[in-house]
Image (cartoon, rainbow, N blue to C red):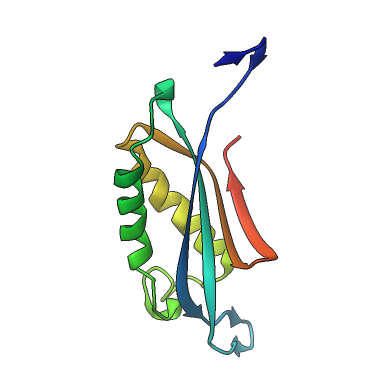
Length: 126
């Protein structure tokens, strides 16, 4: 889209929260299980600048979140064998949400997941 001579790129942001615990696996063993309220912020571009079907996308995001909500990540696939770090959780969600959005003619352009208000890991498309 072009606004006042500037090329623009429009996105939507959807934010949700998930309560889940994890324990990071280290070389010398496993850390202590602890809880987080994970902030999940999706930035979405809709192809052809169509209006985003919020309810449909939010319902699909809830379905993804329900896989880990209220659970100990270390016992939930793929984190039963993948270290449940902030980075790995963000990568997993990016892959799963990208596939869900394809059928809605949308693209996940950025995903931010935070384990606290001051600690986020982000993945952005180039």
